[in-house]
Length: 103
Image (cartoon, helix red, strand yellow):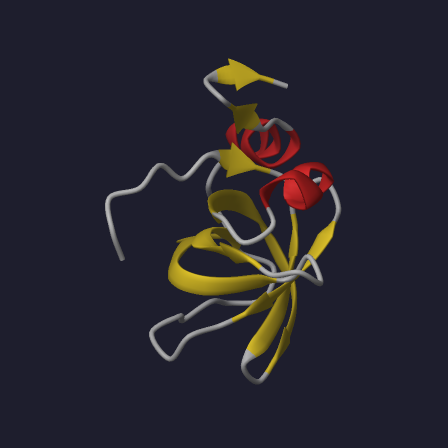
């Protein structure tokens, strides 16, 4: 993976970043083999890599490429656990930072 910018987005901005690398924080609401669903102000289907070790109902941040079907192919995943702090996590998953400004 290169050092390209990875804007932090949520589900509502996926269309604007097709075929681009993004960073998304949310809650893992479903796990099915090599796929999962991340709730980031809307559900996002994510395609996991072998290094992704995520747990159902935990907070997570993923870095990946938005696919044409608006799913995300994960290159890096971080599981923050289930005790991240309600207010802080709510702020991360509901707000997107796009182009250096809060949306």
